Length: 286
Image (cartoon, one colour):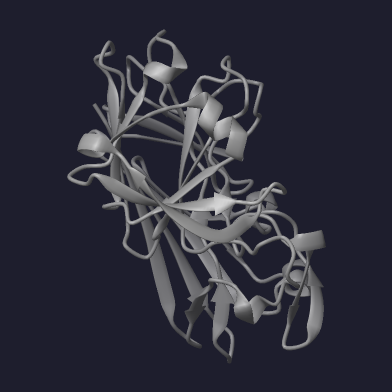
Protein backbone atom coordinates (compact mmCIF):
# COMPACT_ATOMS: atom_id res chain seq x y z
CA UNK A 1 0.00 0.00 0.00
CA UNK A 2 1.23 3.51 -0.82
CA UNK A 3 0.88 6.12 1.95
CA UNK A 4 1.14 9.87 1.36
CA UNK A 5 2.07 12.45 3.97
CA UNK A 6 2.31 16.20 3.37
CA UNK A 7 2.81 19.43 5.27
CA UNK A 8 2.24 21.98 2.51
CA UNK A 9 5.96 22.32 1.82
CA UNK A 10 6.92 18.72 1.10
CA UNK A 11 5.01 15.61 0.14
CA UNK A 12 6.38 12.12 0.77
CA UNK A 13 5.10 8.78 -0.49
CA UNK A 14 6.03 5.59 1.30
CA UNK A 15 5.37 2.04 0.13
CA UNK A 16 4.44 -0.37 2.91
CA UNK A 17 6.44 -3.01 1.02
CA UNK A 18 9.84 -2.50 2.55
CA UNK A 19 8.80 0.77 4.26
CA UNK A 20 10.40 2.34 1.20
CA UNK A 21 10.37 6.07 0.56
CA UNK A 22 9.36 6.25 -3.10
CA UNK A 23 8.91 10.02 -3.46
CA UNK A 24 9.91 13.22 -1.71
CA UNK A 25 8.76 16.29 -3.58
CA UNK A 26 8.20 20.01 -3.26
CA UNK A 27 6.08 22.02 -5.64
CA UNK A 28 9.18 22.51 -7.81
CA UNK A 29 11.24 19.31 -7.54
CA UNK A 30 11.19 15.54 -7.05
CA UNK A 31 14.15 14.63 -4.86
CA UNK A 32 13.97 10.80 -5.03
CA UNK A 33 14.96 8.74 -8.06
CA UNK A 34 11.98 7.76 -10.23
CA UNK A 35 13.67 6.17 -13.25
CA UNK A 36 13.48 2.66 -14.62
CA UNK A 37 17.21 1.94 -14.86
CA UNK A 38 17.25 1.01 -11.18
CA UNK A 39 13.74 0.22 -10.05
CA UNK A 40 14.27 0.91 -6.34
CA UNK A 41 14.13 4.23 -4.52
CA UNK A 42 15.28 3.91 -0.90
CA UNK A 43 15.56 0.31 0.38
CA UNK A 44 15.87 -0.41 4.10
CA UNK A 45 18.84 -2.64 4.97
CA UNK A 46 18.15 -4.96 7.90
CA UNK A 47 19.44 -7.12 9.51
CA UNK A 48 22.42 -7.09 7.13
CA UNK A 49 24.21 -4.50 5.01
CA UNK A 50 25.89 -5.71 1.85
CA UNK A 51 26.64 -9.15 0.55
CA UNK A 52 26.91 -12.42 2.48
CA UNK A 53 29.13 -15.14 1.01
CA UNK A 54 26.87 -17.72 -0.60
CA UNK A 55 23.91 -16.05 1.17
CA UNK A 56 24.74 -18.29 4.15
CA UNK A 57 26.05 -17.54 7.61
CA UNK A 58 26.40 -19.36 10.92
CA UNK A 59 25.29 -18.20 14.34
CA UNK A 60 26.18 -20.25 17.42
CA UNK A 61 27.21 -23.04 15.07
CA UNK A 62 23.95 -23.25 13.13
CA UNK A 63 23.58 -22.25 9.46
CA UNK A 64 21.06 -19.70 8.18
CA UNK A 65 20.29 -18.27 4.74
CA UNK A 66 20.00 -14.56 4.11
CA UNK A 67 20.29 -12.55 0.90
CA UNK A 68 22.03 -9.26 0.20
CA UNK A 69 20.93 -6.42 2.52
CA UNK A 70 18.71 -8.72 4.61
CA UNK A 71 14.95 -9.08 4.30
CA UNK A 72 13.34 -5.83 5.49
CA UNK A 73 13.23 -4.41 1.96
CA UNK A 74 11.07 -7.34 0.84
CA UNK A 75 8.80 -7.37 3.91
CA UNK A 76 5.35 -5.78 4.01
CA UNK A 77 5.16 -3.33 6.91
CA UNK A 78 1.94 -2.70 8.84
CA UNK A 79 0.75 0.83 9.56
CA UNK A 80 0.80 1.82 13.24
CA UNK A 81 0.22 5.58 12.91
CA UNK A 82 -1.14 7.49 9.92
CA UNK A 83 -1.31 11.27 10.24
CA UNK A 84 -1.26 14.13 7.73
CA UNK A 85 2.48 14.70 8.08
CA UNK A 86 3.64 11.57 9.92
CA UNK A 87 3.61 7.83 9.26
CA UNK A 88 4.79 4.92 11.38
CA UNK A 89 5.17 1.45 9.87
CA UNK A 90 6.51 -1.72 11.48
CA UNK A 91 7.36 -5.37 10.99
CA UNK A 92 7.89 -8.03 13.62
CA UNK A 93 9.27 -11.54 13.67
CA UNK A 94 7.52 -14.04 11.43
CA UNK A 95 8.25 -17.76 10.96
CA UNK A 96 9.93 -16.85 7.66
CA UNK A 97 12.14 -14.17 9.21
CA UNK A 98 13.02 -16.42 12.16
CA UNK A 99 14.22 -19.10 9.75
CA UNK A 100 16.89 -16.70 8.44
CA UNK A 101 17.42 -14.49 11.53
CA UNK A 102 16.75 -16.39 14.77
CA UNK A 103 15.61 -13.53 16.98
CA UNK A 104 12.36 -11.97 18.14
CA UNK A 105 12.43 -8.35 17.01
CA UNK A 106 10.41 -5.37 15.89
CA UNK A 107 11.57 -2.83 13.29
CA UNK A 108 9.67 0.44 13.29
CA UNK A 109 10.02 3.10 10.57
CA UNK A 110 8.80 6.62 11.28
CA UNK A 111 8.57 9.26 8.53
CA UNK A 112 7.82 12.83 9.63
CA UNK A 113 7.77 16.09 7.70
CA UNK A 114 8.93 19.17 9.56
CA UNK A 115 8.98 22.32 7.38
CA UNK A 116 11.46 21.70 4.56
CA UNK A 117 12.87 18.56 6.20
CA UNK A 118 12.03 14.86 6.16
CA UNK A 119 13.05 13.08 9.34
CA UNK A 120 13.23 9.31 9.18
CA UNK A 121 13.77 7.25 12.33
CA UNK A 122 14.21 3.48 12.22
CA UNK A 123 13.96 1.84 15.65
CA UNK A 124 15.01 -1.74 16.30
CA UNK A 125 13.47 -3.44 19.33
CA UNK A 126 15.04 -6.59 20.72
CA UNK A 127 12.10 -8.66 21.93
CA UNK A 128 14.26 -11.74 22.37
CA UNK A 129 15.57 -13.19 25.60
CA UNK A 130 19.18 -12.86 24.44
CA UNK A 131 21.39 -10.15 22.97
CA UNK A 132 20.65 -9.58 19.27
CA UNK A 133 23.44 -8.80 16.78
CA UNK A 134 22.37 -7.06 13.57
CA UNK A 135 23.23 -4.39 11.04
CA UNK A 136 21.12 -1.51 9.86
CA UNK A 137 21.42 0.79 6.87
CA UNK A 138 19.41 2.93 4.50
CA UNK A 139 19.85 3.11 0.71
CA UNK A 140 18.11 6.29 -0.60
CA UNK A 141 18.71 7.42 -4.19
CA UNK A 142 18.62 11.19 -4.66
CA UNK A 143 17.99 12.83 -7.99
CA UNK A 144 20.77 14.96 -9.42
CA UNK A 145 18.69 18.10 -9.85
CA UNK A 146 19.19 20.12 -13.01
CA UNK A 147 20.67 19.09 -16.35
CA UNK A 148 24.39 19.44 -15.71
CA UNK A 149 26.85 16.56 -16.36
CA UNK A 150 26.94 14.04 -13.51
CA UNK A 151 30.56 14.81 -12.72
CA UNK A 152 29.83 18.46 -11.93
CA UNK A 153 27.76 17.53 -8.85
CA UNK A 154 29.41 17.80 -5.48
CA UNK A 155 29.15 16.41 -1.98
CA UNK A 156 30.28 18.75 0.77
CA UNK A 157 31.12 16.95 4.01
CA UNK A 158 31.77 20.00 6.17
CA UNK A 159 34.92 21.08 7.97
CA UNK A 160 37.13 18.12 7.14
CA UNK A 161 39.94 17.51 4.67
CA UNK A 162 40.19 13.75 4.90
CA UNK A 163 37.91 10.71 5.11
CA UNK A 164 38.77 7.06 5.72
CA UNK A 165 38.19 4.96 2.61
CA UNK A 166 37.35 1.26 3.04
CA UNK A 167 38.58 -0.60 -0.03
CA UNK A 168 36.61 -3.37 -1.70
CA UNK A 169 37.80 -6.63 -3.20
CA UNK A 170 37.36 -7.60 -6.84
CA UNK A 171 34.24 -9.50 -5.78
CA UNK A 172 32.75 -6.36 -4.21
CA UNK A 173 33.24 -7.36 -0.59
CA UNK A 174 35.14 -5.23 1.94
CA UNK A 175 38.83 -6.12 1.83
CA UNK A 176 39.69 -4.86 5.30
CA UNK A 177 42.23 -2.42 3.87
CA UNK A 178 41.75 1.28 4.50
CA UNK A 179 43.39 4.41 3.17
CA UNK A 180 43.28 8.10 3.87
CA UNK A 181 41.06 9.85 1.32
CA UNK A 182 41.88 13.57 1.00
CA UNK A 183 38.97 15.90 0.20
CA UNK A 184 40.18 19.46 -0.02
CA UNK A 185 37.81 21.84 1.70
CA UNK A 186 35.57 18.92 2.65
CA UNK A 187 34.31 18.56 -0.91
CA UNK A 188 34.03 15.50 -3.13
CA UNK A 189 33.13 15.90 -6.81
CA UNK A 190 31.12 12.89 -7.94
CA UNK A 191 33.25 10.70 -10.17
CA UNK A 192 31.34 8.06 -12.10
CA UNK A 193 34.58 6.41 -13.20
CA UNK A 194 35.74 6.04 -9.61
CA UNK A 195 32.41 4.74 -8.31
CA UNK A 196 31.99 2.30 -11.20
CA UNK A 197 35.53 0.97 -10.87
CA UNK A 198 34.91 0.05 -7.23
CA UNK A 199 31.13 -0.60 -7.42
CA UNK A 200 30.67 1.36 -4.18
CA UNK A 201 32.71 3.92 -2.28
CA UNK A 202 32.59 3.37 1.47
CA UNK A 203 33.82 6.02 3.87
CA UNK A 204 34.01 6.51 7.60
CA UNK A 205 35.14 9.44 9.75
CA UNK A 206 32.55 11.69 8.18
CA UNK A 207 30.92 14.36 10.32
CA UNK A 208 27.51 12.73 9.95
CA UNK A 209 26.32 15.16 7.32
CA UNK A 210 26.70 16.03 3.65
CA UNK A 211 25.33 18.59 1.20
CA UNK A 212 24.47 17.44 -2.34
CA UNK A 213 24.51 20.29 -4.83
CA UNK A 214 25.60 21.63 -8.20
CA UNK A 215 26.93 25.19 -8.46
CA UNK A 216 24.75 25.73 -11.54
CA UNK A 217 21.53 24.65 -9.80
CA UNK A 218 19.61 26.61 -7.18
CA UNK A 219 18.31 23.47 -5.47
CA UNK A 220 20.28 21.34 -3.00
CA UNK A 221 19.87 18.70 -0.32
CA UNK A 222 21.37 18.68 3.16
CA UNK A 223 21.52 15.20 4.61
CA UNK A 224 22.49 14.10 8.12
CA UNK A 225 22.50 10.85 10.06
CA UNK A 226 22.95 9.68 13.63
CA UNK A 227 26.32 8.77 15.18
CA UNK A 228 25.45 5.06 15.34
CA UNK A 229 25.72 4.95 11.53
CA UNK A 230 29.52 5.37 11.21
CA UNK A 231 29.90 4.19 7.59
CA UNK A 232 28.70 5.92 4.45
CA UNK A 233 28.34 4.19 1.08
CA UNK A 234 28.09 6.06 -2.23
CA UNK A 235 26.64 4.16 -5.19
CA UNK A 236 24.87 4.66 -8.48
CA UNK A 237 23.88 2.48 -11.40
CA UNK A 238 26.79 2.45 -13.90
CA UNK A 239 25.16 4.59 -16.57
CA UNK A 240 25.33 8.36 -16.83
CA UNK A 241 21.62 8.36 -17.71
CA UNK A 242 20.97 7.16 -14.16
CA UNK A 243 20.95 10.67 -12.76
CA UNK A 244 21.04 9.93 -9.07
CA UNK A 245 23.45 9.21 -6.25
CA UNK A 246 22.77 6.86 -3.34
CA UNK A 247 23.97 8.28 -0.02
CA UNK A 248 23.76 5.33 2.35
CA UNK A 249 24.57 5.36 6.08
CA UNK A 250 25.40 1.91 7.45
CA UNK A 251 25.92 0.70 11.01
CA UNK A 252 28.49 -1.90 9.94
CA UNK A 253 30.36 -3.49 7.05
CA UNK A 254 30.08 -6.88 5.33
CA UNK A 255 32.85 -9.46 5.32
CA UNK A 256 35.75 -9.98 2.95
CA UNK A 257 34.02 -12.46 0.66
CA UNK A 258 36.52 -15.20 1.53
CA UNK A 259 36.22 -15.93 5.24
CA UNK A 260 33.29 -17.99 6.48
CA UNK A 261 30.33 -15.83 7.42
CA UNK A 262 30.18 -16.18 11.20
CA UNK A 263 27.51 -13.78 12.48
CA UNK A 264 29.31 -13.26 15.78
CA UNK A 265 32.38 -11.98 13.90
CA UNK A 266 30.65 -9.33 11.77
CA UNK A 267 30.66 -5.62 12.57
CA UNK A 268 27.22 -5.81 14.10
CA UNK A 269 25.34 -3.69 16.57
CA UNK A 270 24.67 -5.92 19.58
CA UNK A 271 21.41 -4.94 21.25
CA UNK A 272 20.80 -6.30 24.76
CA UNK A 273 17.60 -8.23 25.44
CA UNK A 274 14.61 -5.94 25.90
CA UNK A 275 16.45 -2.86 24.62
CA UNK A 276 15.87 -0.67 21.58
CA UNK A 277 18.01 1.54 19.35
CA UNK A 278 17.04 4.21 16.83
CA UNK A 279 18.86 5.17 13.63
CA UNK A 280 17.97 8.66 12.40
CA UNK A 281 18.35 10.25 8.95
CA UNK A 282 17.21 13.71 7.90
CA UNK A 283 16.85 15.25 4.45
CA UNK A 284 16.58 19.05 4.23
CA UNK A 285 15.33 20.22 0.82
CA UNK A 286 16.52 23.68 -0.17
